[in-house]
Image 1: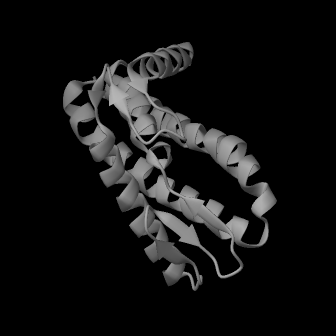
Image 2: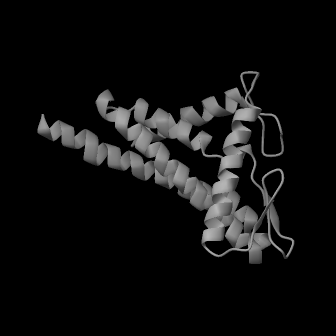
Length: 174
């Protein structure tokens, strides 16, 4: 378990030292290389999937320009680059890549984990947007605290699955 937290910490530090931009920035860069358009593509995808999911669930949210989702009561949220699951995907990939296990199994498990992370992020953003329609004051709690830690719990659960069902099973078979 220490290995998990060490890699999580180091991946997070690496991200913080190499990715420039915060939630209010319109420019995102990696070691000075502008990646804004790539992050904006993913943010636009998150917005479209969130909008589609909320409409499927019967929500009356509207999709405005600049990835803004707004309700008729005036409550709105903007989906920005940091709402994408790119950082969490990077951390997950680092955890599995630098953990023990056969590389051949990592080749199928890492993409599977990325799919889980992608869909959990759509759920996370959709839940936050749905909650703030009637409780806009709860945005910070759910965005900054609750779902941030639930996201890391999902990554931890995938690592536990990797350790218990893939790595240990292969050790027992050998």
